[in-house]
Image (cartoon, rainbow, N blue to C red; front, side):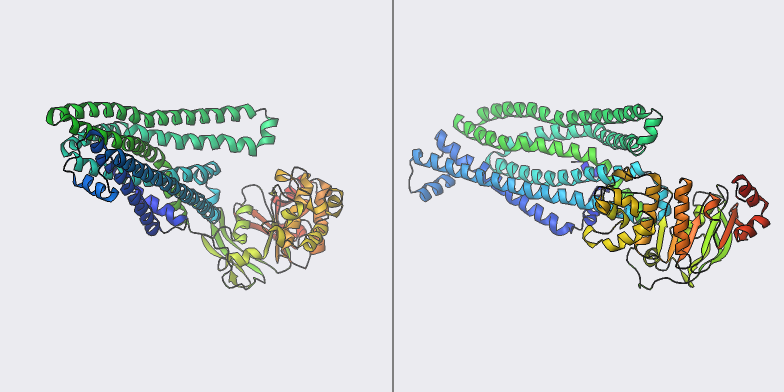
Length: 603
């Protein structure tokens, strides 16, 4: 009724969502429509059975072939027996149909709920496996909105579409029965209700679409306040800005509540209009029947129409509600479809190794240049260097020198605009999963989950597969043994959300233990000591000294005390290698680095 015409791509969007859930649309939808047809036929038979029942009750059954057949089947012509018998059959038919409808709805809602869960999971999977550069450019509030709210809206469209098909089949069956009983009256009824339904839908179509857009925008706005408010709890507390986030979230939720109220009213309006149409229709039918036929025939037809209205009017209301839901929620459907199209364009990371051969050897960068997609100038210019196997190399430089970008290239998180990054003569992008398996990374801000210390060390490993002895080993390597011994349940102690039970230094050393858990060939410290006290920095430096010669260590640091003992120090400036050598050699060859050493009071 104009719903799919408003958005020609809706069917394609729905097919995409079904494919995301791993459902074969053709077979599933065919089964749904088949069951809907069966239910419509049962409803049609129930309404049709009202004709002989009304004829018997009004004494106008003379000459009816249907009545004659029923009398023969019952073995009697006594209305006192026939009427209760037919009434019981009709009641049984409606009971069976109602039970079948409940069972069908149970199956249908379960199926669509599963599709909602699976499609949301698939969308999350695509976001999780998207290229790192694309991920950094996204707003997390928008990602959360798309995965949670938009997939729920898309599922509402699917369920409403299926309900619409079922209800339209039921209405078609009822109209068929009425047309056989009284063609002229049926035509008049269809015209009246068609005018009401089409007129209302045309009038409300634009408003329903606007409400859907408002719901999607308000949902995104709510996420924009909720996430920073909770994730930045400490900063919000110290700046006394919590109320600003709360007020912003309140405005967004009230905006969404208002849109929901508008949708409820807009969805409810057709029901009242149809009730008015029903009264007008009955009045019109009565005038036509009593002026064109006998009172008995009029009562018979009115009885059938009354029975049909008990089934048809609620069905028409559901049709109107389904159409409102489809229009209001198709914004979410379009968002999901657009997100999938964007993610497909960016490519997908494969976490499975290509051939499983571990990377080994020197790490080589050959004339590497990198420019961000939205930047005019490269952030790195023709960087060429070799990191010897089992050596310790440090990248230093002022902010904006290109250290983090160079590290992302070595890690294989982004690909060079030009040039190559290799390990043992093999590009790190040939088999990313295997390359990642050889890396252990300690970031500046170690991400901890609200789980046991052991689970945080073996991050991403199922609890039953965690090697407790290896956990204890790397805890010792990270000089956390005394800390763990003081915890109430040792390594099985839950560290709290983001590791709130641990100090900053302890979290950093836990990050080092995590990096060592899988026995990496390359250990990377990305500003891992920038926020540590001198004692903790010294402990980590001592740990690195113990590991010297056992694996390749790459350090990115602002604090020069961390990198003083590096075998090779690379000083970056404006995206280029300004100086390289030992700490002493770089200080002698670069005035700028010597000044940084002087400012850091490192002599």
